[in-house]
Image (cartoon, rainbow, N blue to C red; front, side, top):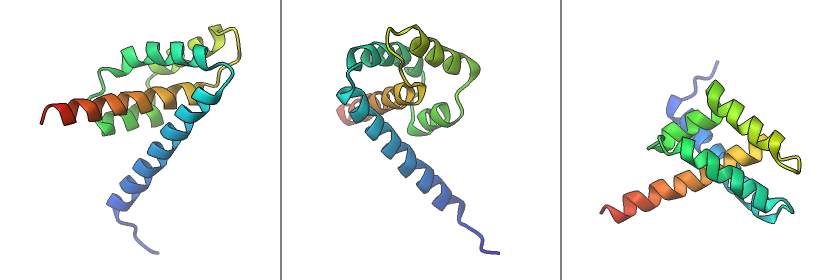
Amino acid sequence: MIRRDPSARAHDDAAWALYEWRTAWDAVNESPNADEYIAGVEVLLGYLEKRSTFTDLLAAFTGPNALLLALTNILCADASSQLEPHLLMAAACNLRLRALVKERCSSR
């Protein structure tokens, strides 16, 4: 059996999440329902504001708590068009990560 370095797994998870978040953001912006997605993203950003690290965001994305999951599903169900929860959550994580990077860069 080959043992895998745990840090390699963390790297793979991070790379996967960054790819998912970026492609979701692009899909949301290209969607005919972009306005509805953006409105949903803004709501989720209020919840994600408590997440102050990439690790926190990754945890919220890969294992959201019941409240975050319910909120995401309600936002998608209440939209006039059928929105995809995965895209909504990933796009929100993308924007939150951008805000975290901007905060860190401006504090230097």
